[in-house]
Image (cartoon, rainbow, N blue to C red):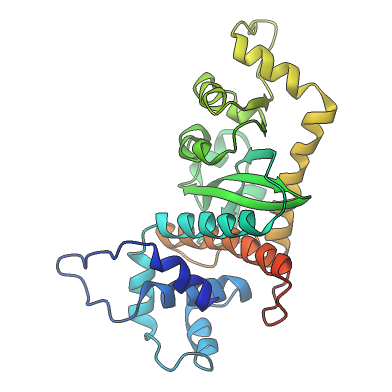
Length: 283
């Protein structure tokens, strides 16, 4: 994991130390590795550092480690996901021809309240992180192409927009009704892709836009849209092995951890493709 993190950080620009912040003694690759191990085993901050003592000669203490995570840019784990995705594409003999977008949630802070409330009551509780994931499939293997995390009830449309450029031209893009947006459909068309996003409609909501009509037609085709459930299997795998609850109280760290769990899924796919026996992950 540390070697993958160091390889990723080679292409990253070094961040300047914030004015008045603590000096950066430990490199970002080490912090990223410890955080990944923490999520892999669902450790607390202290347990993660104790576990890593056997593998690293020098480690930050609890306070500096927490501080570094608190100041971590969420774009770093997102780019780490994309870095792993590029490696998967290099090894995989086939180009990804199917993409699915969806927006899972990871609970954080304390007990997940969503099971107890419904309707307007649930909007009073913000103890979860919203993530939007772009999943790709190549050679019957699922992997996370990119992902972006936001606060509770963040707009899925705004979160998914930066991910559209990662789609391979000439492929299908599947999604549920939450992504029924003309702006998203136009971006998909510009990538020369075919949208199969379910359309919101009713007696008073006639579908008039040509892009929405084509997307609805594709979504009603079972041979195409039935593959949308592949992303549910990916989320189920991640949440079953790594839990759907992030054991932190800060939203910024919860965003980073939710993305790292998706990055770990990509690491597992990469290892299975390379058939390396030295790394074992619970996927």
